[in-house]
Length: 164
Image 1 (spheres, one colour):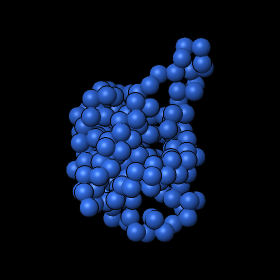
Image 2 (cartoon, rainbow, N blue to C red; image 1 turned 45 degrees about the horizontal axis):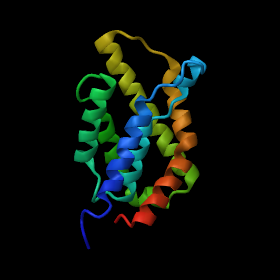
Image 3 (cartoon, rainbow, N blue to C red; image 1 turned 135 degrees about the vertical axis):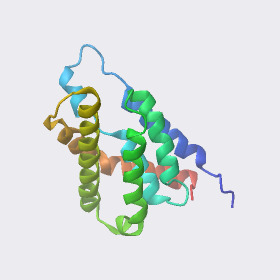
Image 4 (cartoon, helix red, strand yellow; image 1 turned 90 degrees about the vertical axis):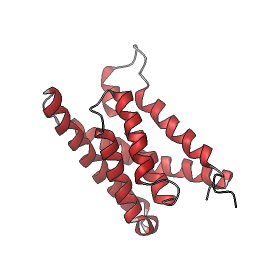
């Protein structure tokens, strides 16, 4: 068995999540649609760590987080810490998470995204004095609603490419 087989798929899906995360909406669309953007990178990292903890783990999540810090112009290490925390939960409980129903997985995704967005807002408030809003719940809700679709698409890709 080739240990690097399918590694390109993991990188491509993480890259696609980064592109979706920084893509802008057209000018003609309402501005409020930008607020309901899901946290694509967290969803993709959560999936890969939950399904393949021996291939994607804390270090790779930290590296992806550092790249996301550069993309978002966030304080260096913020997204690395958040993605590493999400990947720790996914790695620690991967067997249990795989046995959960989709509703239970969605609730875990909701909790992880709400906590990570709250920590992000806290750090941004400390660094840039941006203030607190209830906007942390909106990306968590959209991420929760999109989790079954993200899971199904990534699972189908993983099976077709035979990533193990």
